[in-house]
Length: 167
Image (cartoon, rainbow, N blue to C red; front, side, top):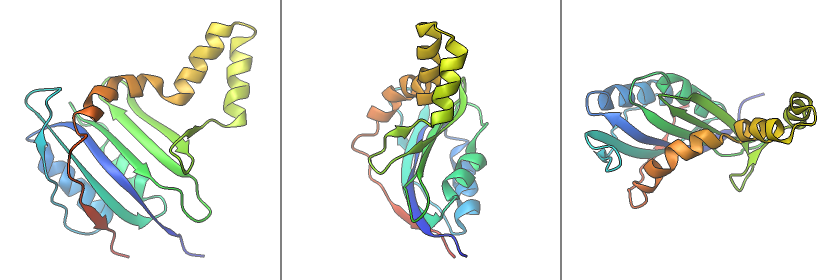
Protein backbone atom coordinates (compact mmCIF):
# COMPACT_ATOMS: atom_id res chain seq x y z
CA UNK A 1 0.00 0.00 0.00
CA UNK A 2 1.50 3.32 -1.03
CA UNK A 3 1.07 6.65 0.69
CA UNK A 4 -1.21 9.24 -0.90
CA UNK A 5 -0.06 12.60 -2.11
CA UNK A 6 -0.88 15.75 -0.20
CA UNK A 7 0.12 19.37 -0.14
CA UNK A 8 0.77 22.14 2.32
CA UNK A 9 2.46 25.43 3.02
CA UNK A 10 5.69 26.37 4.79
CA UNK A 11 5.54 29.76 6.48
CA UNK A 12 8.92 31.02 7.66
CA UNK A 13 7.78 33.89 9.87
CA UNK A 14 11.24 35.02 10.99
CA UNK A 15 14.78 33.90 10.26
CA UNK A 16 18.15 35.61 10.21
CA UNK A 17 19.61 36.30 6.77
CA UNK A 18 22.45 33.88 7.53
CA UNK A 19 19.94 31.09 8.27
CA UNK A 20 17.91 31.52 5.06
CA UNK A 21 20.10 29.36 2.78
CA UNK A 22 20.27 26.65 5.44
CA UNK A 23 16.48 26.56 5.60
CA UNK A 24 16.31 26.25 1.82
CA UNK A 25 18.79 23.35 1.95
CA UNK A 26 16.82 21.61 4.72
CA UNK A 27 13.57 21.94 2.77
CA UNK A 28 15.31 20.83 -0.43
CA UNK A 29 16.60 17.72 1.34
CA UNK A 30 13.07 16.74 2.42
CA UNK A 31 11.37 17.53 -0.90
CA UNK A 32 14.12 16.11 -3.09
CA UNK A 33 14.28 19.09 -5.42
CA UNK A 34 15.96 22.51 -5.57
CA UNK A 35 14.32 25.20 -3.44
CA UNK A 36 14.70 28.95 -3.85
CA UNK A 37 12.46 31.00 -1.60
CA UNK A 38 11.49 34.64 -2.14
CA UNK A 39 12.71 36.26 1.09
CA UNK A 40 11.45 39.63 2.28
CA UNK A 41 11.98 41.78 5.34
CA UNK A 42 10.00 40.81 8.44
CA UNK A 43 8.72 44.20 9.55
CA UNK A 44 7.62 42.89 12.96
CA UNK A 45 11.25 41.93 13.73
CA UNK A 46 13.68 44.28 11.96
CA UNK A 47 16.78 42.51 10.68
CA UNK A 48 14.95 39.20 10.20
CA UNK A 49 13.54 37.73 6.98
CA UNK A 50 10.33 35.93 6.07
CA UNK A 51 9.10 33.71 3.22
CA UNK A 52 6.43 31.19 2.41
CA UNK A 53 6.23 28.41 -0.10
CA UNK A 54 3.69 25.74 -0.97
CA UNK A 55 4.66 22.12 -1.46
CA UNK A 56 3.23 18.80 -2.63
CA UNK A 57 4.50 15.42 -1.53
CA UNK A 58 3.67 12.16 0.16
CA UNK A 59 1.64 12.00 3.37
CA UNK A 60 3.97 12.74 6.28
CA UNK A 61 6.07 15.28 4.37
CA UNK A 62 4.84 18.04 6.69
CA UNK A 63 6.25 16.23 9.73
CA UNK A 64 9.57 15.73 7.95
CA UNK A 65 9.73 19.42 7.05
CA UNK A 66 8.95 20.54 10.62
CA UNK A 67 11.57 18.15 12.00
CA UNK A 68 14.19 19.39 9.55
CA UNK A 69 13.68 23.03 10.60
CA UNK A 70 13.00 22.96 14.33
CA UNK A 71 15.56 24.03 16.86
CA UNK A 72 17.37 26.85 15.07
CA UNK A 73 17.80 30.12 16.95
CA UNK A 74 15.58 33.08 16.08
CA UNK A 75 13.43 30.95 13.79
CA UNK A 76 9.65 31.06 13.81
CA UNK A 77 7.75 28.89 11.37
CA UNK A 78 4.59 26.98 10.63
CA UNK A 79 4.12 23.99 8.35
CA UNK A 80 0.72 22.79 7.22
CA UNK A 81 -0.22 19.50 5.62
CA UNK A 82 -3.68 19.27 4.08
CA UNK A 83 -5.95 16.30 4.80
CA UNK A 84 -5.62 13.60 2.15
CA UNK A 85 -7.01 10.16 1.45
CA UNK A 86 -7.16 8.29 4.77
CA UNK A 87 -5.20 10.95 6.65
CA UNK A 88 -6.13 14.01 8.71
CA UNK A 89 -4.41 17.31 8.13
CA UNK A 90 -1.75 18.71 10.45
CA UNK A 91 -0.15 21.96 11.51
CA UNK A 92 3.23 22.39 13.17
CA UNK A 93 4.15 25.69 14.81
CA UNK A 94 7.59 26.56 16.17
CA UNK A 95 8.93 29.50 18.18
CA UNK A 96 12.30 29.82 19.93
CA UNK A 97 10.67 30.25 23.36
CA UNK A 98 7.90 27.65 23.10
CA UNK A 99 9.44 24.97 20.90
CA UNK A 100 7.26 22.89 18.61
CA UNK A 101 3.49 22.39 18.67
CA UNK A 102 1.58 19.88 16.56
CA UNK A 103 -2.15 19.74 15.97
CA UNK A 104 -4.43 17.62 13.86
CA UNK A 105 -6.68 19.81 11.71
CA UNK A 106 -9.87 19.25 9.72
CA UNK A 107 -10.52 20.33 6.13
CA UNK A 108 -11.44 23.85 7.31
CA UNK A 109 -8.21 24.21 9.32
CA UNK A 110 -9.85 23.79 12.73
CA UNK A 111 -7.75 22.08 15.40
CA UNK A 112 -9.18 18.71 16.37
CA UNK A 113 -8.75 17.86 20.05
CA UNK A 114 -9.03 14.13 20.75
CA UNK A 115 -11.40 12.58 23.25
CA UNK A 116 -8.45 11.33 25.30
CA UNK A 117 -6.92 14.84 25.46
CA UNK A 118 -10.22 16.25 26.70
CA UNK A 119 -10.52 13.47 29.28
CA UNK A 120 -6.97 14.25 30.45
CA UNK A 121 -7.91 17.91 30.92
CA UNK A 122 -11.00 16.91 32.95
CA UNK A 123 -8.96 14.56 35.14
CA UNK A 124 -6.13 17.01 35.66
CA UNK A 125 -8.61 19.78 36.49
CA UNK A 126 -10.38 17.57 39.04
CA UNK A 127 -13.23 20.08 39.31
CA UNK A 128 -11.02 23.17 38.99
CA UNK A 129 -12.25 24.99 35.88
CA UNK A 130 -9.12 27.13 35.53
CA UNK A 131 -6.89 24.03 35.31
CA UNK A 132 -9.24 22.53 32.70
CA UNK A 133 -9.19 25.75 30.66
CA UNK A 134 -5.39 25.91 30.88
CA UNK A 135 -5.08 22.33 29.59
CA UNK A 136 -7.46 23.10 26.72
CA UNK A 137 -5.42 26.22 25.91
CA UNK A 138 -2.33 24.01 25.61
CA UNK A 139 -4.22 21.48 23.47
CA UNK A 140 -5.28 24.28 21.10
CA UNK A 141 -1.78 25.80 20.88
CA UNK A 142 -3.00 29.21 22.01
CA UNK A 143 0.43 30.33 23.24
CA UNK A 144 1.92 29.62 19.79
CA UNK A 145 -0.93 31.47 18.08
CA UNK A 146 -0.45 34.49 20.34
CA UNK A 147 3.28 34.66 19.63
CA UNK A 148 2.98 34.04 15.89
CA UNK A 149 -0.05 36.22 15.10
CA UNK A 150 1.88 39.49 14.56
CA UNK A 151 4.31 37.64 12.26
CA UNK A 152 1.44 36.10 10.26
CA UNK A 153 -0.08 39.48 9.45
CA UNK A 154 3.25 40.78 8.22
CA UNK A 155 3.01 38.35 5.28
CA UNK A 156 -0.58 38.94 4.19
CA UNK A 157 0.43 40.18 0.72
CA UNK A 158 3.39 37.82 0.18
CA UNK A 159 3.64 35.79 -3.05
CA UNK A 160 3.49 31.99 -2.79
CA UNK A 161 5.35 29.51 -5.01
CA UNK A 162 4.30 25.85 -5.50
CA UNK A 163 6.81 23.01 -5.09
CA UNK A 164 6.20 19.37 -6.01
CA UNK A 165 8.07 16.55 -4.29
CA UNK A 166 9.89 14.19 -6.63
CA UNK A 167 8.47 10.70 -6.13
